[in-house]
Image 1 (cartoon, rainbow, N blue to C red):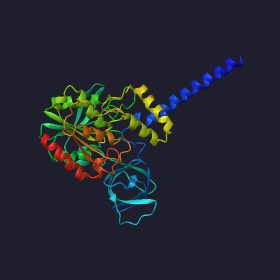
Image 2: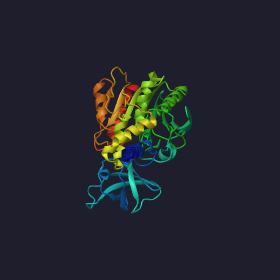
Image 3: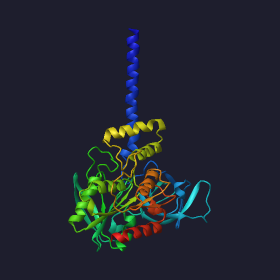
Image 4: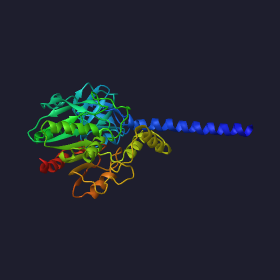
Length: 379
């Protein structure tokens, strides 16, 4: 009897531990699977505003606050744009002074908790940039997908797709550039975004199912006059572009791909976001397994954690990748391997000291020049 009771207790303990592991894995994975659009990722540190003055803002000293370039600064009900660090300004060991370009929404005051974002603009192309645009409804498999269409005279359209932690406001960073070069631009909101259909399971699939919405946008563009399209995606939006190029029935209409900080290993990205929530390293494999079980995602050669992302025989459209070694969310290594495997089709523009999906922010002029050179033959 004692032996039976001891065995039962041991089995119960094992089952309880297993159940607890499943719960922990689910909670850890939620940092990525339930990352809401427009809110900071766990890797984005919260900063405190210490002071503001004409053209200057003082925030908590942090590696993020020292990044070169121009960024949005978001708080509770506020949005501003900050420029480079002002090296001539007096600063303490705990603070950094950056140029305050403008306050676009709300107010920014000492004591506010804020974070840096790659999205410089709020609103729509008309209110933010003064660009005429049309609100389009793109028929998708889950329902109507809202999109902004900025017209241009060319018959090659650019379809812009945001990624983790941002919304379709993010592509407005390059919209003036594309409009100047007369490209029609379609900026898409997809499943899970504000105004778009909900995800059936409420979870982010890192592009594995979301690419169907991009495919719907390609069909919509072709039906409305596009002869060819260029897919410009950030983060998981870049993954969606790769998926569409490989799987869409209209892949022959894809003239090129622009991939900014592509998530080529969803497992690694999920681990990074879970770790940023202080998940112990020994539990990170549980988060990956839980995510696979909840979403059905697999290690596809395009995005597998350990697989070669440049699958042999895969025919890629001309591709430009913007990525760098300081991306804590999507590793730089797979982008380098993809470019090395297809040197005749894939160009890698390395950007240093830039966080995830903020390659443009770190050096807009260099980014746009590389983009201009890439797009010119595709016009």
